[in-house]
Image (cartoon, rainbow, N blue to C red):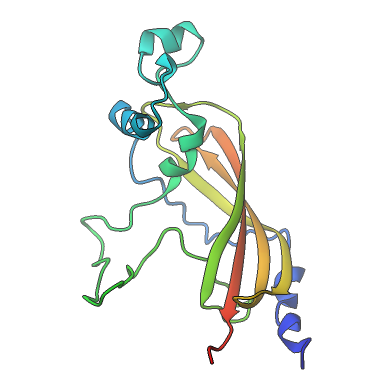
Length: 189
């Protein structure tokens, strides 16, 4: 019986290398603009003219003002809501969650039912600078590993995923690898 729950993850283990994206590519919510870069840098008090002075950025070989590499993931997140979409919040309850979450867990018929999810780690390989005027899109969701494990929060699997980030010209900007833990919480007593 103890091993049964782990066996339910076998189809996901067999699917390592498969792209779990639906083929639909959702671009980040906004085109990168100088004001948003300023807002990102302001609380950090990060003073580099590459991030606000176009002349200096070009002098150093960039196409224009660049966003800090550490802001990359910010520019890949699709909007939670847009004017042409359904309501995002359909409940007035305290702590109600939106009906759509661009950061939610990947679901597949290959995995057992899970209701808990969190990201465990992230790594990025930067290929090309992020420039004002770029619109970034995260492409693909390739499963690199799946390790079933019981933790204090529940039974589930640690998975590692890889995606590519491209700009509006389909130029590769970065590769993101993210670890997640999808699980079924332990019953509370």
